[in-house]
Length: 77
Image (tube, rainbow, N blue to C red):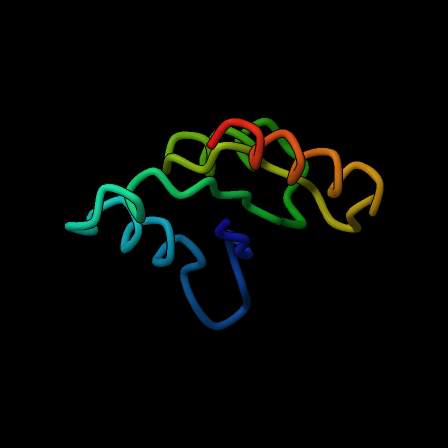
């Protein structure tokens, strides 16, 4: 399971998903991934999904929702 911030003040937060999806390992390529971001706009959601994150959650994260998303992604794999 990959969880990353899709943007930070100092770097592009999309590098972890690019690295995972370009891996030679089939397991790593299919790793479930969740983007966490402060951007709640439509673009804020569309960009992580287009980058191949499975889910996008807006901060602050509701712990119950986060647990449910992680559970759903775990069940997919």
